Amino acid sequence: MISKTRLYTLVSICLLAGYTWVIFNLVNSNHNEGFSVCLIKNTLGIPCPSCGSTRAVIEFLKGNFTVSIYYNPLGIIILTLMVVLPFWIIADFIKKSSTFYVSYISIENFIRRKKVSVILILLLIINWSWNIYKHL
Amino acid sequence: MESQRVDMFIMANSKYFESHQIPAIRQRLLNIDESKWIMVQSLGYKDPTTSLIVSILAGGLGIDRFIIGDTGLGIGKLLTCGGFGIWSIIDWFMIQSATREKNMILLNTAL
Image 1 (tube, rainbow over the protein chains, first blue to last red):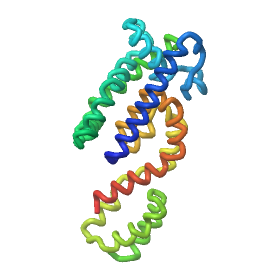
Image 2: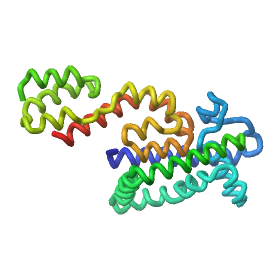
Image 3: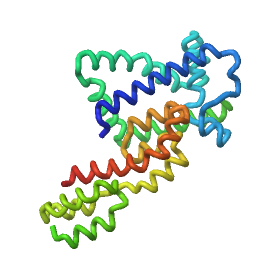
Image 4: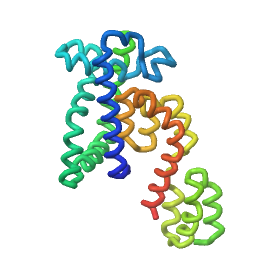
């Protein structure tokens, strides 16, 4: 079980990195074609399950919802997390409560159930095949 | 417990734990009751080498984190292309000690 402070630091670092990355891409949206940080895409040449989610987030912010879903449906999940989590963490920090930590543990236990995990893995594989088919 | 059996256990399983934890584990095993012995021996420890191999091959998908039981962190890695590729590289060096920590937690639950 991950400790509470570690989880909060990790999520904060991820959020900071995520926001920096999105802002960087929004500013450079015209001339970043062919540039990728993805390890799998750079080594194997095929897109990974979450490739295209940056483009999906950016298209969603611009209001092109169908293009966003075409790039990667996971982008919407990431965007939701990026919007919700900062407020949740700050609220926890102010109230000195641990609602986010408790929810994190219970969601983790929910996903570990065999039926749930099999369904999620299947969905992910479908999404991945779609990514490869689209040549993202 | 008899020291001979504890030493046998330590010799067979020392690779699953951090080296600095071994003396403490030995001391605790010496103090435990005979009835807990079968529990301690039958726990499924995760091999750090296996998780390192998985981390190198499929770290970008977060599978290494899923294997050692950090489901939430695994999803985090999966959704971000292995943490923009940086986290997966960091995990090549972190995953072995993370696995050993998980084994220690597992042993603590049995003792």
